[in-house]
Image (cartoon, rainbow, N blue to C red; front, top):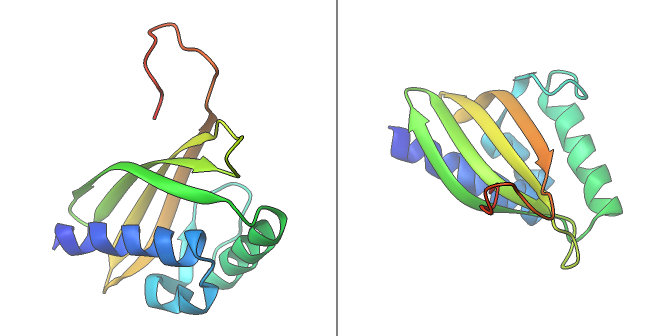
Length: 124
């Protein structure tokens, strides 16, 4: 079950976000999606509108998934989001709760990728 959940989350990020296929959002997102991002209201429609607006502003924006894990009905995805080749990017952790084959709840955390780190290790 968790393998299917991870595939669903990966496919959602690739299809809807990276490829801009918001017409496929209903295949991945519950209509009454519970949203924990403080800048977005609940529901699939507001998220789709946000994605469409962002893709107009940043057509080369893309998530590069670096790692993911699943536990029960939760999927954790650690990605690098970049707006283009010159962008150092933003480290993103998305947490998706899956029920009945769709994403029903979402949390995310973001941090700009710094030029240097004290440890010398990348943050993504």
